[in-house]
Length: 288
Ligand code: PDD
Image 1: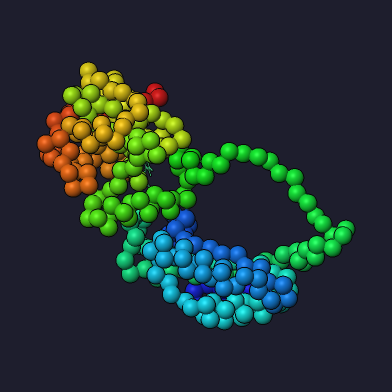
Image 2: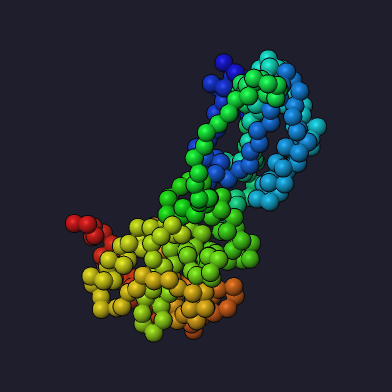
């Protein structure tokens, strides 16, 4: 059984415990490194730690171990695990919070975890020593699969925090073509001249259940016009009303974007109508 490092202590891997409320588990909110070590000799130690420190700084995790502190922990971990040909996995998450929320919590201590794993002896490059791969080819879709409700939410967390840092509750997002996609943790709707529109389902947005229920309720129980279509940023900024939807927010009216009022700057009449319809019918199952 290998020994691991967790939050200041070395212990058998079987004894290491991390809370499921850890943001690394809930949001993928952390940074990791893998450093190879051959018989106790590390490859690229300084640039690996440099990259980890850059990543931590970029996502706003305050964890300021020096290279010497990392090295001391790694040396002890390698000694405990026999100093053979080992990969060293390092992981720092934002830490364990008491509740789940996208915004960075205050007062939590980062979780620091490290373990080793066996790696092959280093390739020599000598004749007859080569191993080779066969590979598949694919279009790079990272991370253009926002329709998957994945727990890898760091991108969402960083966008959410952008809004929080500016003093707002959410951040609405646009793609490279300046088309509306969604909020960092919700879907988005606009209203213009009484017509309700929301972006169509594709890889750019999560197929929200609140969105689904709302569209169904509006189409079944009102004469309001509802469209699923591409919406430009200009249309959003010119909308009479903007709403966000999610299971925790239901329908949330947006009264300002980047400090500029949406429509009149007040909660709009179509929102009142839609929220009342939603309240009346949200327990209906749309598939029954
Ligand atoms: N967020 N889009 C994103 C990126 C979301 O994270 C969510 C939900 C939604 C709305 O989906 P639904 O209506 O099914 O809740 C859209 C949840 C509430 C969260 O992460 O807390």
